[in-house]
Length: 379
Image (cartoon, rainbow, N blue to C red; front, side, top):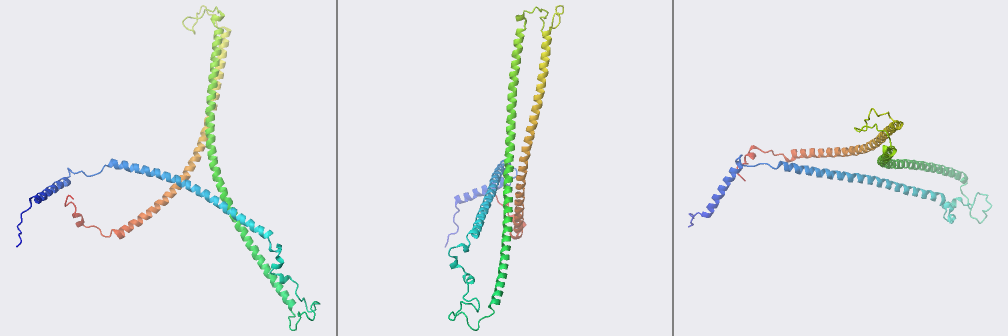
């Protein structure tokens, strides 16, 4: 008999009880809304999304720059390939024309041996029935011959002329078609060359305008600095000259007996001793006034010249900015068209994918029993 009342393992029972208690504690932590923590670091995720978008933007800009360079290189290579093909075509045409003009089969030394029409142009053995070359033993005259050979040959010659005329007309028609095709090809090639020249000229004009603007700006700065230096030197010279004249005409050197000057200031005099201004003082005042008028006029002229220079610089900068803005608008429009095409293509793919998922994949919607199996355990 088998012994069925085996004793219970205490360690196993304790382990089972411990796991049950841990499961109960875990359920209390998870199902308690006041204790559990649900969510993610929103700020960190936003920073990661921002960094990712910034990296993708930089990669897109780099790819666009590479694509622009690739398109420009492809256009240049296409132009070079077309020019090379046209040069080869012209060389072959010239070679064919040279052969047709200077290497005719009739000009060869052995043409009389290889001429296929030698028998046609050769004198026949018998020209007519009364040919004196036909003797008794010539075997060139027999009974039953074609006596209408002249009329037959005349008809054959007329037929040959008609065939030759038709062949000449067909040849002229083929040559005319070939000339028309060559003319259209030349027009197309010239148009492509002119377009390439226009693009190169536009780029060169833009660069030249920018260089001229920078050169004019640097020249204006140099002129302004030179003018400031000249004015400073003139001012120093005037100051030195004025100082020398003051020392020469001063009371110390001229021993001026004029003591009417007040001790309370240079602008004050002693009334009972002052005899009026001297002619030298009046002349100095007039001279200073004249200098001030000239200085003011010069400053106004410099200001007007500076305003004109700034106006020219502003117009040059505006022109350069307008050219750059047009170029940017052209590039942006191209990018917008490419982006619109890509969006339309992605939209069509997304629509097809959505229809496929709705019609083929999501064909078994979940029921209430599917949702009731959740939250029954902490695992």
